[in-house]
Amino acid sequence: MSRPLEPLQPATLTFDDEGTPRSSLFDDRYHSCEGPLAQAQFVFLGGNGLPERWAGRERFVVLETGFGLGLNFLATWRAWRDDPSRCTRLHFVSIEKHPVAQYDLATYYQRALPQDMSDMAQRLVERWPLAVAGVHRIEFDGGRVVLTLAFGEADALLPQLALRANALYLDGFSPARNPDMWSERICRHLKRLSADDVTLATWTVSAALRRALAEHSFVTEKRLGLKPKRDMLTGALHPQAQAAALRHRPQAGTPRRVAVIGAGLAGCALAERLAARGIEVVLIERHAEPAQEASGNSAGVLRPMVARDDSFAARFSRAAFLHASNHLRRLDGEGRPLKWGPTGVMQIAQDAEQEQMQHALWASHALPDALVRHLSDWEMTRRVGYTVPRGGWWFPRGAWVNPPSLCEANLERAGDALTRLFSSEAIGLAHDGATWQVSAGDRTLVSADAVVLANASDAAALSPLALPLIRIRGQVTRLPRALLPQLHVTLCCDGYLCPTPDGDLNLGASFDVGDEDVSVRGDSHAGNLARLERLLPDTVLMPDVRKLTGRVAFRTATPDRMPLIGALPGQPGLYAFTGLGSRGLVWSPLGAEVLTARLCGDPMPVENELASAIAPARFFAPG
Ligand SMILES: Cc1cc2nc3c(=O)[nH]c(=O)nc-3n(C[C@H](O)[C@H](O)[C@H](O)COP(=O)(O)OP(=O)(O)OC[C@H]3O[C@@H](n4cnc5c(N)ncnc54)[C@H](O)[C@@H]3O)c2cc1C
Image: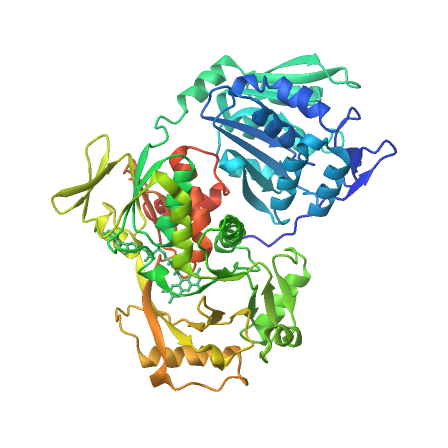
């Protein structure tokens, strides 16, 4: 399903005479005149019985309507840091229709927050997402504080969330100025997202809100408010609704040990995520090293997919691209062995009609310039250093990446929680009613609470269900750097040309459905050179095909070209992470986050409709 690509309208921050920040869109204050943190502390933390209620828990989930300036988040994070009995992992999920610009956030924090919060504020500003609609996930304090920001309309986004909240912070602008945020429908969604022990707090005691909450099984109570307000509101689910929520509590806990089959981009990304959640991971790979098959090319391209109709593919790819580029920056910042070049990516239009569409989409301001801009042929030529035939899109956050080094960086980050069971081919899978056994002939390789098939098209051989996987041959051509000595950006059209870690260039790639030939062929080189000619028509002295080298590998795709990420229906504890097609670099980090959230019962990092669009269940009608 698709919908038109719609821009987010960012908030514009102004200050009143007392220096309190205001939203000009709602003509209302962002916080009470008692100071930036007083309301967060008194109403939201105090009203929800925090920090006491999270003591000793494995996970605590706060759901907030209205992120605003992030003051409730920062106050909650500080309370969590200061509390020796804190929960192991704090999830803070918040919805915001008009995100504040990064610069405004930084300026405001500098003038308003106490010194002891400057470190937290700075981290939030550094990781502040681009103003792109949808869900963004950011981690702090080694992944123990997880902020999930959903940018867009609360009414549209709440039904798209999957989580069980232990505390609700209702903090929109006043019901008189922003009634949509306090409606009966919002209260209905909040009930669906509540755990049995949920509590709520808000600074307003509006009669309409109390009625709407009561209609959806919340019992509320007026309490002494924070000056100048006389009252505030707290609440919990009615005992009957609590009992119903308890019945819907997921039975299975977080698995202690997970076997992941396949050490390509998918398996390595997942191993890192699971290990970060403290889960023991056994990674089974038939080769002696990771990334020997599809993930073994010397370089590939990381870029989003932008489409006028904003299909599920475009939305998932955009979210995945932003997530991947943050993940790569984190790995790089930690000094992991990642080889990549954040050069930006230029996607040259294939013809005049496509260029017109690209220009129109950019000019509609549906997406921020920091994600995609249109450049004319002249601007492209200037940046590329060689003449390009047309203008097109410029993705400033795009990059070339060496996939094997990304695999290794993820495995290094997984640390001691990871066992590498390499040079071992998984041949069989069996479930004994409690655990899964992965075997090689009559030898059990590993017993685990859950198994993830991250072994590309070979997942079909192990899966009890018939997985609809398609293999597509791809050959890349290696070009000597001397051919284009000035090229330092990554270029795409119907093919791509990018730098590699050793200085040469990678030209890709053939797309041969139903072709199982593993040898490097002259006709595939010729096809790639034709792609190069379309990228840089006047510039390149074409090399002799007979002297070229290259590499062949096989993409694994699905009939609808979306990945296969999620539980296999009717097979408790068995999951697939495959079908990454030509987008493994882009899709694997977010795919791993989605699957880990699924395995652990954490809040989902994507909208429900995107999770369904990638779930294996879409290919299996309920029996
Ligand atoms: C020519 C080409 C160019 C590409 N260019 C790009 C690009 O520019 N950008 C981009 O984002 N993506 C690109 N891709 C796609 C990307 O490379 C893939 O999507 C990605 O590598 C898939 O990763 P994977 O982990 O699913 O599969 P793989 O990397 O194939 O990993 C699967 C692993 O499972 C192992 N395995 C299989 N069966 C078993 C078993 N029974 N027991 C144990 N181990 C097993 C295999 O040995 C393998 O290591 C390209 C792909 C090709 C072929």
